[in-house]
Length: 395
Image (cartoon, rainbow, N blue to C red):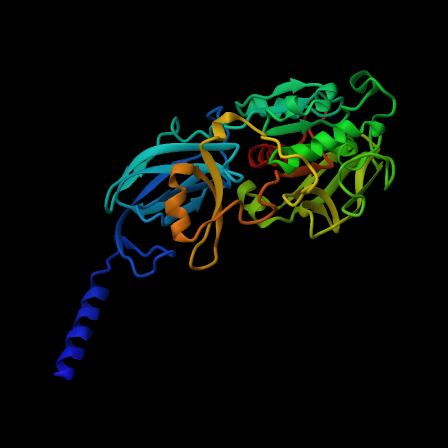
C-alpha cells in the first residue's frame, strides 16, 4: 500500500513538471507558483514625448502582490513578461516619489501587446524649484524634458514654510552672489543651512552644482577651502576647493553600473569651460556614492544617508504624494527593489514581507546630488547632458 502511495505521488509530480510550458512563469517571490503569461512592450519617454528615458523601473503586480519587473534600456525600450489579465503597468524613476506613471493594460496569454508612446510618458509628480545661477541653468534642461520648476530666491530659503512645499530644490552654480543673498558673507546665514538640513531630513531632495557647494559645506559665493564656515554637511564627510582648471577632462568614467546602463555609455569627456571650479578633495565613501569620476577623482556624487536627528518634523513635498508611500519590495533572491505605491496596497505588500521606506539610504531623508560640472554658457556639454537629465529624473 505504501509503495502504491509513493507511486501516485511520483506520477503527480511528473504531471506538475510537464504542465509548465513556455507560456508560464515562476515568480521569484513565489517559486512554487506557475502562471500563464504574455508580454507588454513599449518605450519610456520624458514628458516632451521625444527624449527616451533609460533606467526606468517598469513593473506590475499580481493578486498576491508578487512583482514582475524590468528596466528600460538606454533607448527607453522595455519588454516585460507578466501574468495574463487586466493590471496596471507602473513606470518610475528614482524611488518613484517624484516621477511616475500608471498605465492600465490587459496582458494576453502568449501574446505581446505594445503600450502607445503617448501613454508611456513619465509624469512629473514632484513640485520642483530652482535658484537662478550665474553659470548653470539646470532649469533649461528641466524645461527641455517637458517638466516645470518654479524660480525661488535665496531669501526664500530662509523660510522653511516656503521651501517645504517643494519636493526638489535645484541650487545652481553661481546662485550666491551679493545681489541674490544681500550680504557679502552668506556663510553666516545659519537660518538657510538649518532649513536645508530640515528639508532633506524630512524627505526633500537637493541638486547642487560646482560653486553651489557652499550651500552644502560652507563658504560665501563658493567654497575656497576645507572647513569653510557654514554649511550643513560635516566637513569630515566632504571637502572641496575651487582649484579646478579650465579645459577638457578626457577619459572620465561612469563608475555606477546602473547609471552606465541607463545612459548607454560608461566613458565621456567633460569640458570645464571656466577655471576655479570646485574639486572634491576628500569624501566619506560610506556616505557618498561616486557616480562619475576621472581616475580616482570623484566628479559627481550622491547620498541618501543624510539625517539630522535634531531637525524638526516638517511635512515636505506636494500633496499628490499623500496617498502614496515608498517601500522596499523584498524578493526570495534578495534582489530587493524600491517602489512607490498607493497606500491602499500597503497591507498586501506588508503581508508579503515588504518593509516601509527605501531599500537603501535613510528611510526618511531625501537625496543630495552634487556635480562638479553643469550646463554652461557655450551650451556644448556633450555627454554630460544625458547625465544631468538622469539626475533630474532620479532625485
